[in-house]
Image: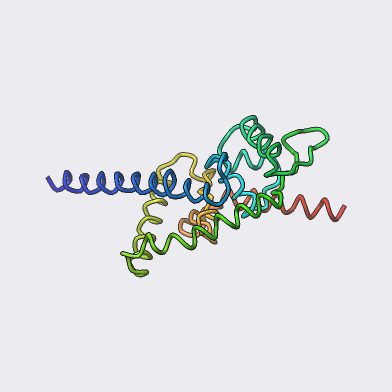
Length: 199
């Protein structure tokens, strides 16, 4: 009986987490992105633009790894954004996946407008919870997230993209002592850039 009650509590939490995630992403985030000037772009496009803004991600191959999609899918997404003026790309001589991808001023302006709207609207949405309650809930959700990762066979390869969700620190690395896949890729990219400029 106690086990059933415990499981019911877990099911309630998981159900609420799914509803919260859907409302936050599919309703609020999508609406703010459209208001900022991103009409016609998908939330996957937004994620790619945010990754380029936060990480030192510069090649299509790295973007594919960060987004968890195939190189072909990432190339297609990048091509569409290049054609629309959101990204600029310098194609690699031998390998198209090694093309350097950067945000255009138009994309930087869009992300700045989106960020401004988020910072303006979110406090009103969360006004019923105190900062202390929100921090406690955030800690609990972080702990559960790490436990979910602990049950994944390839947890070391998972990137949660902490940086694009207001997180300056890597949740996986800081709470569980793992080496962050995201940071590894960013450090490799930075090292390649240093060698390129040094050589």
